[in-house]
Amino acid sequence: MSAQNRYAAMSRRAAMTAAAMAAMATLAGCGGGGAGASAEGDMALGAPDGAKVTVVEYASVTCGVCAAWQETTWPAFKAAYVDTNKVRYVFRELPTPPANVAVAGFMIARCAGPDKYFDVVHGIMASQAEWRAGVNPRDTLFRVGNGAGLNNQQIETCIKDPANLQASEERSQAAVKAGVTGTPAFFVNGVQIAGTSMEDLSRAIDAELAKG
View 1: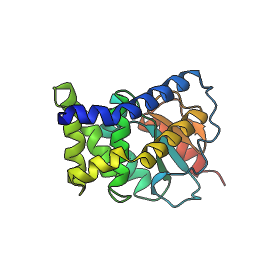
View 2 (view 1 turned 90 degrees about the vertical axis):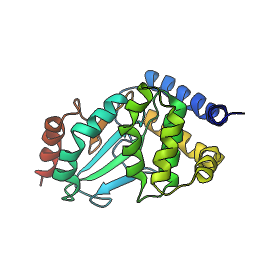
View 3 (view 1 turned 60 degrees about the horizontal axis):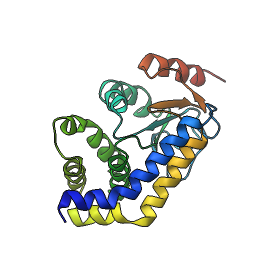
View 4 (view 1 turned 120 degrees about the horizontal axis):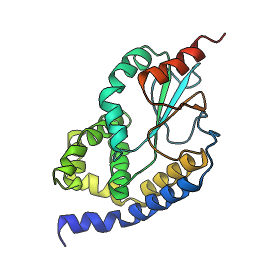
C-alpha cells in the first residue's frame, strides 16, 4: 500500500467523524451556551484562567477564512491583547473539509506538545495554498510535524491512536453543543461576535475591559 493510501485508510474514521460533526452543526441552535466556560482540552495563550476577558475562537486548520484571519488579523490581535495579558485567548477545534486532514492536523499539533501546539496549527493554516497547488496534504502535515520535532513514525502513531481520535471527537461534539455552526467563530465572555475583524473584536473586548 502506498504512503498516500495508508494515510487515507488511517484517516477514514476521522473523516467520517468530522463529517458527522459538520452535519450536526448545521442543525444546532445558535445559542452560545458553553462557549465561554473553560473546557477539557482548551489550548490558551495570554492571561491565565479566570481572566476578566476570555476570547474563544473556534477554527479549523483547513478553513480558508480561518487561515486568512490568521494571516491578516492575528498579529495585531496578539500584540494588542494576548502579549499584554489583557485577555485569555482560547483556541478550540472544529474540523472542516477536508475533514481527515483537519482532524489529523489537530492531533499532530497536540502530539507536538503544548509549547508547539500553536506553531503547528498556524503552520498548517499557512500551508493551505500548497494543497490548491497540488501538494498532497499528507506531505504538509508531516513537514509541519517534523518542524515541531516529531519524526514520521511518531506522527503516524499519533494519528492512529484511538485515544487521540476519541478526544478529537469529544471536542467537536462540545463545539456543536455550544451552538457553533461555522468557522471562524469568536466569543467574548461567552457572547458570540457578529464579525471577525479587529474592529469587531476590539469593540467587544474593550467594552468588557471597561466594566467595573
